[in-house]
Length: 124
Image (cartoon, rainbow, N blue to C red; front, side, top):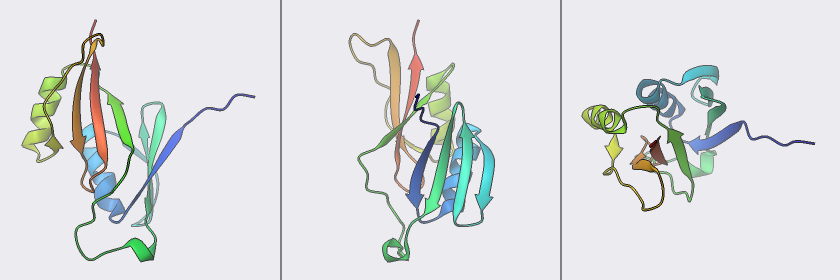
């Protein structure tokens, strides 16, 4: 038996806003949707899904996720250029960094509900 991950679900308050963020900024495509409740995006070989949080967790204030999870997205090409374009669109992104012994560049950011993601460009 082989077990293969294919989908990650993030719980959020504003599913439309989350869906739009990832479609507009990373070009993911919509696979299925229940308006304001559920959305699934094709993200390379995986699916990224958003599920409305339970009523007990909903708030009238701006929702910010509290999580120990980081989504990692592989960038084919110019990480610096992508970072610049995303910052121009108002996306929260840190500086590009590298680590000794790892042939890649990294840049951390946050989506519209505070979920942390990392953009990674492999080098040579």
